Length: 278
Image 1: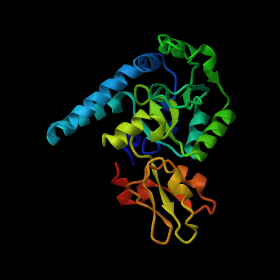
Image 2: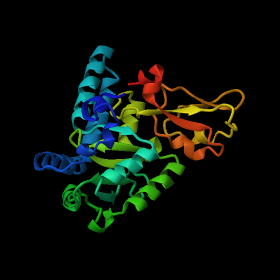
Image 3: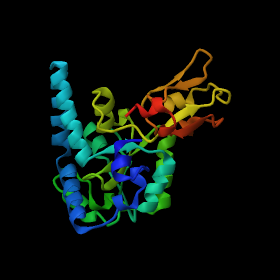
Image 4: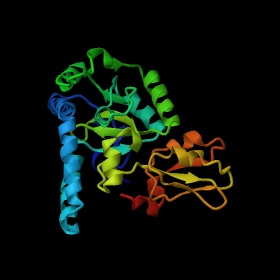
C-alpha cells in the first residue's frame, strides 16, 4: 500500500476516491493555476530538470541523493503519478464528469508521433485552461485539437494504446487532486518514465498491483515481454515468462499480449516482497 492510499484514500486506492475529483473553489483554482503553468512552462522545466539530473550524476552520492529526495518531495506535493491497470482506468473515467483528449506535451518536445495520447479527467470543463496553457506555443495546438469525449470513446482509445504497449498513468495537479491520464512508454519521450527509470529518480511510483505469471498456462510466446513498457519481464530457459513482483510496475499492459491468459494482477499488499517496492 503506497503512502498516497494511506493519506488520500483511507487505505484504498487513492485515485478511485471521489473526493480527489470533487470541485471546490479554493482547491480548483490552485489546480487550474498549476495546470496552466505546467503546460506553459513544460519545455523550460523539462530542460532544467534533465540538466540538474545530469549534474547530479557527477556529484558525490550523498549530495546527489539529497538533491533527488528534495526533487521527489516537490513532485509528491504537486504532480504525483503512478501506473494504473485498464480496469482502474475505467473506474477513474466513471468518477470524472469531463474527459478531454489533448496533445501530449512530452511527445511534442521529444519530437515523437502523437495521437492525442493524454486525457484530462476533471469535474469541470477545462477548455479555458488549455487555451491559456498552450497560448504561447508557436505552432499550436489549436482549440479544435482539444476534444471532449464520452467515457466509451476514451476507454476504447486507451485499450487500443495498451495493445501497442503503452501504459496508463494517473497524475495529480496539486496533490491529491487528479486531473490526467497519460498513455506512454519510454520510446515516446515520456519524461516521467525517463526520469524514474533512466535516472533512477522515481517521480512516478509503482502501481498498486503486480503481475503474476501462471507458468503452467504460459505458452512461451514472449508477446508480453515485448509489450512490457518497463522491460521487467523475462523469458527463462524453457521460454516461459517470469517477472519479479518487486520489479513489476503494475500497469497490467502485459496481459494484452497473452493469448492463454496466463497473467493476472495481484494486489501489492498480498506479498510483502512486492510491497517493499515502495
